[in-house]
Image (cartoon, rainbow, N blue to C red; front, side, top):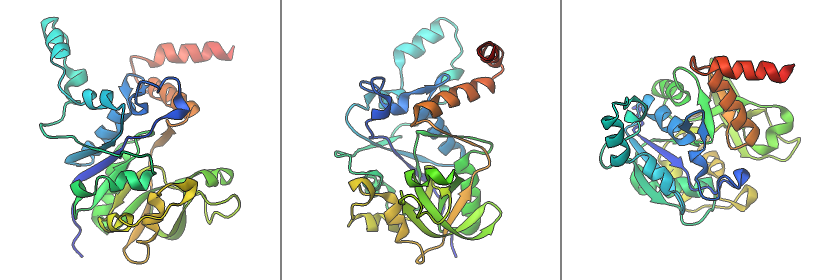
Length: 289
């Protein structure tokens, strides 16, 4: 079996970010910073580290700040050079000419619809999908680890992460089959199963490597959980027709679509930095007194 390389990654970033209002009224939720870097930059860096060559953003209205972030900033760069300041902090942000690619999701019809909006750019190649509000910290990155497994097995891969049973109704849940190290056979995947009906406590934490046939399924979508076009439902139709695997990440996951998760990410990543851990730890110690 020939395993095609994964060169393209789709970032669905058209969401309104209502859980972070009023902060996200005029700022994309993907531009919320963890320490000193926007969430979207963490996700893009993860993709590039994994070998992705083309970044595809599925955007919506009000996402101009996100596009500007990955563009050239002549005034900022010129000022920094004149003042003799290091360009290291922004050197990795700018993408090569013609990349990233931006497409619009005109209506908020669900994750499946957002991914489908990138169909003409994805073409007939396998592709990755990364949800930026899921911040993954590890070495190699989550997508990098998944890519290594994909290059061995091929087919489709989705992240797999254990959550408490009482939380399974909030996520896409995997029914696992045979397990080989961190790779798990996927027998079924259900979006937000009713409480008490989940077949496992393995959820899908926003990282996917999918074959292009999923786009053909999304050409004729059926609305699922929440009245939205769910990517999970389209993926479920590939199971049994193509190899389908879950992959367990060796690292940390922070749900930055949730306020508590975002705060936890800021604390954890601050404590991991030599220039910040001293004062941050001292503040935490003071709170404990």
